[in-house]
Length: 638
Image (cartoon, helix red, strand yellow):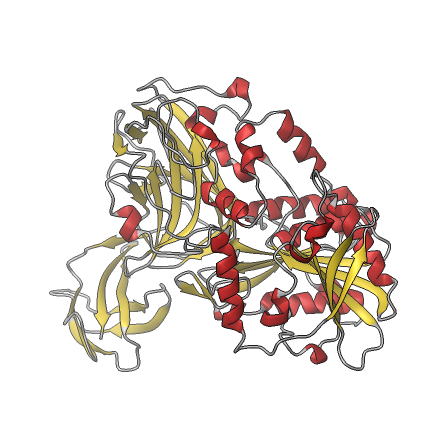
């Protein structure tokens, strides 16, 4: 816990130079048991009363005094059209003395908080809520209690569910996630270790946290494609649209951007930089839409919020915003891409009847987590290159499509269906899907895991060890995403048996998974040899949800020697040669490293030059479409 407190102090000190220190009104809110919650109240000068945005936090309300208020307000509270109230949760920081034995009823506490605000002279009775992660989850609990003066809620990277699959996706514990939550003071390890299979405990808590029918105010959910709550949010939003009261059902909306969960480092919801990628046209979209939402419901401003579609989605790759009325999008169909022994991923069922590939997995030397939807503060978040650190290890197998000759638009959940075997009684299969750029970068899009003892289900009765050498089905569904794989790119599937410390290391021995009730321990681990079958009798494949995809799509043939480019690297003039051709009239296309067309050249001779003076330095590909296929050569401009 100490390291997280030190980290918070350093973070606060870091902000001192960026913001003036805010001075709130300090007050306390009485709860129904007579104990009080600590609150900070920020009122713009000249506002006698007005609408309120409530933030309920377990991470110390005083942080906002130094970092500034959210939604673009910062330290300039007098520019705000809203009063902000920031309350510490019962049992945390300023509200520590309000703690009591057992779990607090945060719905009742939130009810008391909202109604206390409504009774204050500076409040006009219209109250909305905002906050990310745990600050988002409590907003659903607030709405569940239906306080009369709650007008709307805006949870960010958060969903209300407390589900087995959130902590044990396909049976494998999310090690780093639980460690971070424990470090922040939530202390979940003891409960999780007591229930590593789906039992009556999980049935009870899942039912208790399934309440879309209780959300009676408009909800604007904000999430990110690189967040660990993506699927939970998409699932709950769909439930809101079908199970919440009819009077409010059509008023719920969701915004999904190219964002990580945030909480540490510089990447957060609304920032341009996300991992190793950049999304300038997504910057602060979350704040601008949240203000539009609050203005509509809390200030009664006619700003066309009621005309905003249910889904505002960012399509990565193309890097553009979509306004949609449903998810998955209309026109999505699933297409199978089979895994081949040569590492190719295509739509043709393998012809050989016995092909397979294998690798060794040593729990003492697991495949590392590099980016993705992580939470622990010492790990990278978001899209990172997997080429070095994951793909260059001997404990991973990669399958790639050919280079795309057309954009491939994917919306929905990727499903990986494997035929597998192992030399041991239990093991994991971890999959990562990446977007492979023309320069070779393999940027992580999504990942998931399957612990094989849970292949038939998650109850104790369904748990079964493996028979060494026997072939099993391993079906892994990844979280929802929205991306266009651009011309010149490839789609890649990486298969390993660990992704550590994101997921718990499988010891392969078929024994107790968490010896000593530790989320991260090894006892009698053994190395496994795991096999992926890729033949006509036992075919493994990836199922991709694609839009406007034709099964006869052509792919670029690599390494075609009839097209020659030189020098390479090149400064200003690129020389191109086709050798002896009877018909030199041909069109060439120049693509940048993102797969975007930057130049179209009409050639009328076998040898010619292309002027590159107006191009930035970087990696480029020159492509020619001929006889139903592409040939391409790549080069570097200095």
